Length: 300
Image 1 (tube, rainbow, N blue to C red):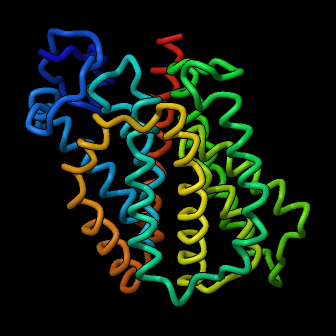
Image 2 (cartoon, one colour):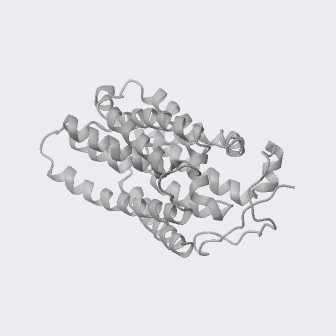
Image 3 (cartoon, rainbow, N blue to C red):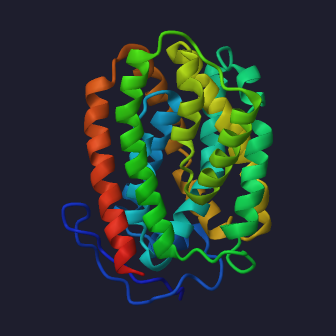
């Protein structure tokens, strides 16, 4: 019989009460796929699938994915290590989503704008690898509680940036591309925040928004950049034990959600104006991020 970490149920307005498991550790041995249905309840799988679907929609061009990571951490079944587990679980699936999205937007990706970000991004991932990606050999020990607070804080920053970006678009009179030094700095920050919590979206938006790209080119270039960045991250995450077979098997079960989410986002991007829907999403992101910060403080 496999052991599991205890559930810590967030506030009832976020998550309904779930059946408590009797064990309090992660599985010692890698479970078979059919065993995953004894580890995760159907409600667990539904929350994980919803998070993946939202991220897939965002990768497809409908910007609702920012709420997914805070939501996934809050709903992750094994709460004692939820933040680190969720980040490690998501990375291979993010790579698959990026590949699917790039295939849809391949004619619109501005690779020349991406190339200038890559050196700084490699530096950022390398810094993050040395500081906190490894669970055993990191120079800086980042507890799961601190990671929850960081993810929640980045979520609130995302909300603030979304509000500020409207003002920037309104007052920006001409396209402005960042210089090489700025790209190096932005790339390094993106590499660190993405390695910490898959939260480099606002950083890349700061780079691309002043360049006033058309909508499809903007989405395509964002996706192309994250395909490269997430592929770079796979190296240290794999070497340092953050990509576990257990989570790869869970990801295999969730694979059908990826094309469904990406294609939904792709078509919604073509036929809708998501401004009003975005307001609801960012309000939900602010609430989820707040509860994630409170949850992290309670676990300090």
